[in-house]
Image (tube, rainbow, N blue to C red):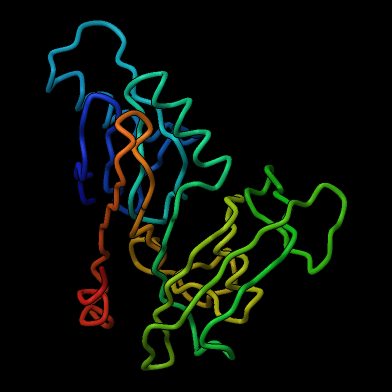
Length: 227
């Protein structure tokens, strides 16, 4: 399994490239986590005794790779949580999906409800019960061999949002058995990747644009051209 890579590091933030297959936080499997790795990285690099403050500001599903932001201080965590809560952070994903979308660009809106026992979301076209609104936009970047490369920008941050909304769009993410794709990948990853984050640094107030790109050979020429 690939190892995480540090993309940005200062006194307030640690931004890490999460490989597919890594948990951000622990679950019933007891497997190691990205948070544990990041905490140990800070402890060793700065020779910190005792507890190390290193808290994730958001999550990525286990089979998804890409950028994860950690706060190194309680002040940074509080301010980053506010950025995410108030949608003042731009998140861009890449995905390879099955087939070709009927519309090359579209805004998708659903209401999602999470079944925590089955770890699976359900989507509805209209508001229903405790379901929460989920909105994203996508545009198609390239297509060949009955697959398409999409750039996806979620406006909301619901559990499994992109995965289930892509299924509802008739374009399940490659490898995502849980949400409609026909065949799992050998490494159990799915072709969804958190590739770009843009936001104002919570303490320094400078604009940040961070990019990490997946290694997807069949679309690599298009991915390499992105910024």
